[in-house]
Length: 191
Image (tube, rainbow, N blue to C red; front, side, top):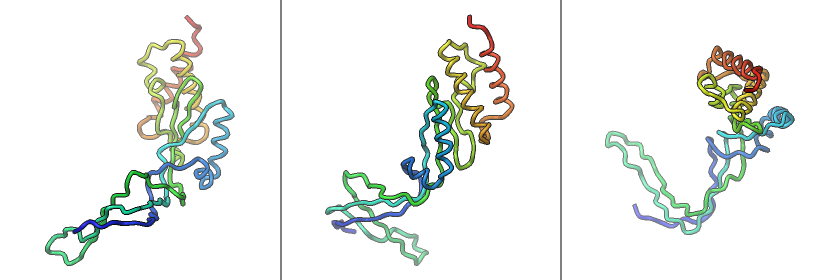
């Protein structure tokens, strides 16, 4: 197969992990706006990650090297499969539109605890709990770490009250024990 040169614009519809602006998340999941607002009103911050959906990507080509041909197939099959190899150059393809938002995570931080809890919005699961909270029974806490743990506990309890369930990685029995231990630690006088 000989290389050719390709010019023009390719619009590619795809589905998978892609950076999705928060405005598009709210457009496809309007009820998420209330959750975002409540998180902010509590003095916490939020961000989204692990965003997946359907999108349109645009690639502009200007004399891009290109090879189109038949893929090698097993000799016993009569069906041809074609392949295209295309060097799109240094310019990153541009996502021009989001057509659906399939899933996303909400990462919640507090003033003293970066990413206290991460929620999978579509499965309604708590998928990440800050390790200092989850492993609190094994840590000798400084005053700053105690603030971090208390704030992470507050986010965890709030998420549970909103109907988010613990993922399989976080057993309910341990979660209850961790919350009880943190409540006990917060009730102790400072030393």
